[in-house]
Amino acid sequence: MIKYFIPLLLLAAGTASAQAVPPTATVSELMTKALPDYPGKEALVLMVTYPPGSADPVHRHNADAFVYVLEGAIVMGVRGGKTVTLTPGQTFYEGPNDVHTIGRNASASKPAKFIVVLLKSVGKPAVIPAK
Image (cartoon, rainbow, N blue to C red):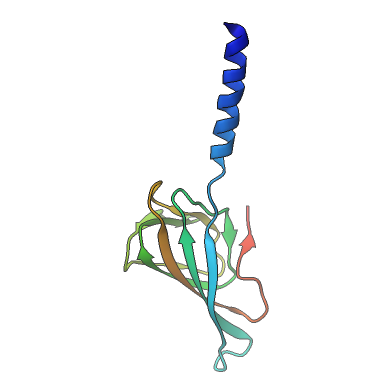
């Protein structure tokens, strides 16, 4: 009986680790526009689609980030802030010094879609990994 138990245990462990990595979001750049009234700054508009169960790694933007939910429900939070669940028509803001600790689809079965408008320095990355 033990000889069957160990392979089943290894199979279960392999399945659990394969499922531990959430699906990644799809990010599409919709528009980038220099802001002449704010030299050195630009607006970047992104469309983000979270597949069911998707989650972001901890990151920051070094930008003002404005989120608007189009479909589904997303969970957002920054270090030291309150975690919120947002549905279509709701918004979220991240400041240039915020660390985005929670960003995920609230559903394990339905996708979620949202728009992000970043006001950032020209030529700087939109997303920076953080701890």
